[in-house]
Amino acid sequence: MWVERKAGESMKIDTILNNGAIYTGDPNRPFARSVGIHHGVVIGLDDDLSGVEAVTYADLGGRCTVPGFNDAHMHFSTMGVEMSQLDVSYTAAESLDALYGLVEEHAASLSADAWVIGHGYDQNRIGGHPDLRVLDTITGGRPAYLLHNSHHMAVVNSPALAAAGIDAAEHMVVPPGGDLGRDSDGRFTGLLLERAMTIVSSAIWPLELETIVSGIGAASEWAVRNGLTSATEPGLGGDVIGNSAVDFRAFQVAHERGLLDVRMTLMPYITAFHELGGSDRPEGWGIDLGLRSGFGDRFLRLGPVKMLTDGSLIGRTAATCCEYRGEPGNRGLLQWEGPEIEQLIVDAHVNGWQVAAHAIGDRSLNHVLDGVEKAQAKLYRPDHRHRIEHAAIVSPEQVERIARLGMVPVPQGKFISTLGDGFLEALEDDQHSHIYRMQSFLDAGVCLPGSSDAPVVAGEPLQGIHDMVNRKTTAGRVLGESERVTVSEAVRAYTFGSAFAVHEGDVKGVLAPGYLADLVVLSDDIFTIAAERIGELEVIATMVNGSFVFDSAIQ
Image (tube, rainbow, N blue to C red; front, side):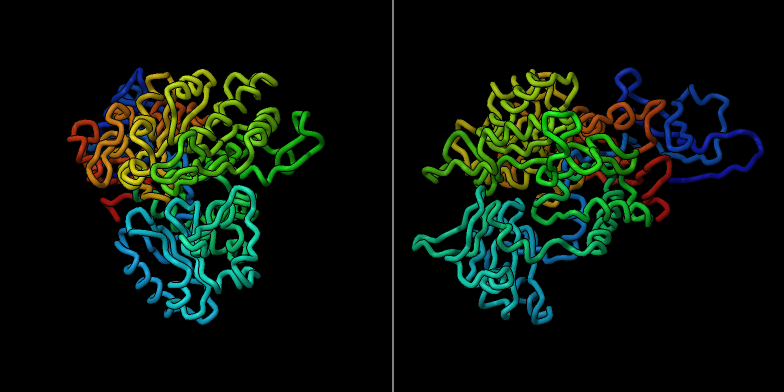
């Protein structure tokens, strides 16, 4: 911002920001013109600062200023790593032929034994999945692994199978919770769904520590340019695709090297948990040293335990109560049997963990809700805030149960525009009103976070807020008009709501005395511009811990 430094011997606070249109997020004091900051914490607003001097003054130029954006569910490190990989998304390749052209050109630029790794394709938009036989002919004998935009399926070629120690497709052993894609003649097409991805991904991952650290640094630079000051990474370690036991260390290294300007809450994946002396004891099940949710500091902390219960809606692998449109018999895949899902939730709950259960389909959601009810019956915890990641298909009865159980659903606004047309095609018409609810949760008294699931879709918070308010698909259809939220509700979701979702609503998401000094300065007033223009807004500056980590005015 436009900064003036003043020298002197008298006692001063660190910073005063003046001349702003500041939305504080505090219902008791919603707007301010100035904010005082000391040691990374807000200490006062407006008249609180009368007679107070500062070492640094900054003029906000009358611009709209809001608390720092917080993404409650984004694969931060994966997004950073993918920035250096081949993009085969619809924006890069609008057809299968275009995708094949990109793959062939990229493969030719690699060494003879290198992997051809791409990410982001969507069969719904390009006319189908890539095919193993075509990939065999265009990759020059190199192994290929093309990740679907949902990250719940991938297509491989024959050299990739060979690299994974598989000499023929018919010799593959598909783990429970996975499946293979086949054509009308029963031939394997190269498509690996859900846990079947591990058949080949084990030959690629884990990545080198330095690769992950570099990706975290790249993601951090992107994040602060887009106003993101906090994020929650869902599912490190365990056997999650693309993650490994070194991921937590990579975040620590990135932080130590000054590469990470974003406050991170890191979720361990549930398969990293094991017995620590008996699951019925409070310290008896979890990760080593008995650590649990909440351990850490204000920059790196241990969050909920993540667990997948089903697949993806866009990939038609989410576990649903009804069959997918045009696919008789397909009701998706559970990652565990229902009783196993429920028991895992009980064990995590009893051992003090906050649970973040990926449940996209309404069938899997029933098991999650049943598990939380059983957990509370066994050991009542008044403010557990167990989460439902995505909560994509939710019936009115399930909305009521979520509210009654004190749970936090975590839907993604950007899914509406990017993937919404595919959602509408996947489900029968009577299910459309159940897709990615938002206003229904607010009406039920549930705290709504904001999140993107990037890099599944674009992660810019302003784009997510735009979609929460407008809810229009790529084709211009409104997906759930009654589920639109107001601008104020969407901004609160992307600030306070996401902080609340990880038990940090008492220290961030609001610009009030005692809260962390994380904020974003916008190019225009998000509360007064036309709703359809929210996505056009730009981030002028981003402050984390009382310091500007991005400032376009002086860059």
